[in-house]
Length: 280
Ligand code: GH3
Ligand code: MG
Ligand code: MG
Image (cartoon, rainbow, N blue to C red):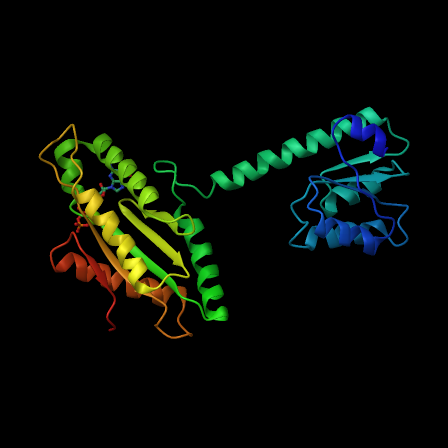
């Protein structure tokens, strides 16, 4: 099988026991797992279950191979999370076709999962992604005693901009602002569209100064931009910033509240500014 599959560009690596198979699957990052359900020493369905529950292997497509083509086996394999099932003896060409098919389906699923985390208008991460990622980053910072920064940003007088120039132009401004964000932030910073004209940024491992500098860059670039369709227009943004320092017990909600409070201050003290949270 190894040499036939190699002709089709598929590299097959094998293990002959449950333990060795799980070890191989978790360390070799395969595109597809073929699991011989009946000939492993223990119950192959247990192995299948373990592979589906392991973080490292749970989303790798798995094709069950079995000496039995009985319906209960097939149904059980699909029930435990096999993507496909093929009974022995099988035609090697059919197996190859099923392997390619499994890879394509897995790629499509990854793409869909990725798209579901993006904002359609700006291409930035969306609110759902932000919520999960922010909780993770906060956790990571707290357990490793590292810094992490959070900034909330809201475009100023955006309702007026829409009212004066139309909603489609407002959309163009949001897209242009997203490009400014991408250009001014570092690769490891996380930029999300939090809601309408609101954005949230996570700055893993950054000190306050680096976070405020990044926000200042975004603020000045957008404020000085000339909009060809409306040369007299100035688009400005307000930022509320907080970094690790609220105490190790703080929750995502308390951090957001702090950044939001700073943003509120930025708005009430005249907009077009970066305000750092200074405590309650
Ligand atoms: P402030 O300076 O206090 O933030 O004033 P504002 O007008 O920006 O605040 P407000 O929250 O009153 O208005 C937000 C506006 O953003 C209202 C809404 O029409 C607009 N908006 C929200 N989402 C979108 C969008 O996807 N496209 C466009 N064009 N406008 C949007
Ligand atoms: Mg707003
Ligand atoms: Mg606004």
